[in-house]
Image 1 (cartoon, rainbow, N blue to C red):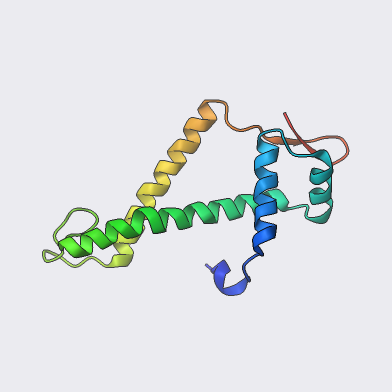
Image 2 (cartoon, rainbow, N blue to C red):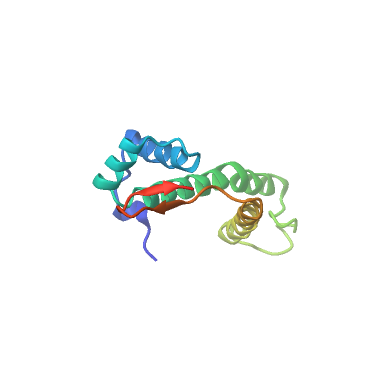
Length: 135
């Protein structure tokens, strides 16, 4: 499995903001048709790129704000993130990190399922001219 950080340079800040703003605008039926057409023409995969940026940002948030503090607390109290004593048996930080990430990400999947059950976000649908419109 390759890491995108090692092979791909980070995207520019303004471009990231433009893609995310356009994605949100489309989801809320507020994307200007001229902007949608410009993005569709210049970057046909802009929706996927915006989704990827959002997913990577959420993962970074989970690691930095939810998982790392759990591990730091476990280290200072002499116990692991799963509640076991550090002296009783040795767990690697990587294993604890993986367990916490799985738990938090599963929570996010559950939220996704709940949003879908409530009707979800509007999904863009292609029209006859190859453009996308929200319904």
